[in-house]
Length: 393
Image 1 (cartoon, rainbow, N blue to C red):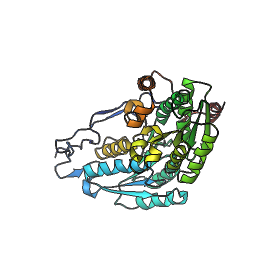
Image 2: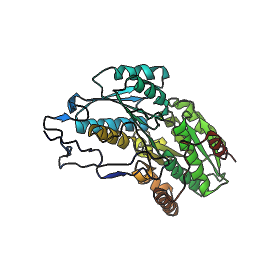
Image 3: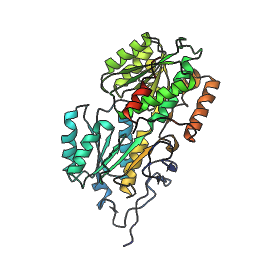
Image 4: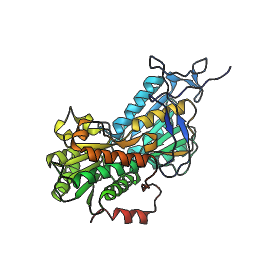
């Protein structure tokens, strides 16, 4: 019987994954999206309904998403879950989300539990916080497939596909936006030329955000002071708020919040201090507008990282047999998965027309590969520390 593979259907247009302008590249691929008029997948399974990559019917395939923290962050966790649910709705596989609540002691046993259960064919995990657990369990269970995003499996394990987003590229744009506001006569700018960065826990991905942000800020004005604070985890909203208020007291009038659920506290602290904030992962102004309009009002923009697109696309490619297990990729501006939220009312009203044109030009140049944006991923630690030290003036 002639086999036919499933066509990956997750986006509404063709998405070219060129993997070009974002550092190391180990795979190049194209994720093609197509839909029939009623929104159902345009491809076919084999005549007997079997998903050939797994030798099962779609309804018998199980995909579990294991989150390091919890849903409800209006950022990467919620987006990852949205991608899982979108793929499940289109392909009909069983989907489950497991929230670890930041408890590192649960990482390995939870992954082992699902790897040992034949009902779960793909385990999806995100961030470097889960990388070591994935590598350990993947080696223990070589027949279990793992998708690891926002972290690289340097071991190149044959049952793991890993990828990083080029958050440094999106953070560069966030830095430019922050610098344009703090050096302007915007209503909440205080003239002190000081901006802030509040991160959750230090890891390679967060360093990648920070290094891009620093470079973006200083591309506008090298004399801008950048305050950097770490919450220590991604859950403590009270600490996130406390650090935002503290940075505002030190003169910051724009703060970039990169801290998961804890970042909601940072955004609230910016609103309380009447300074601008920059959200992360999703368009947090739009997301929070109805539930927390006070906090949303001060979010001038957000650096989006479309983990929903990433997760749904990777699952689709795993199902249609085109995901290259054992390989690693980086996706960024050229792939449409990072960027700046620039189409909401707050962005349009806070930034001047001149500032918006400037930001559009920077994004166009960055997307075209005309800017050399540094990345913490793969960077020597001494060089990284030297760059981070330039934040404070």
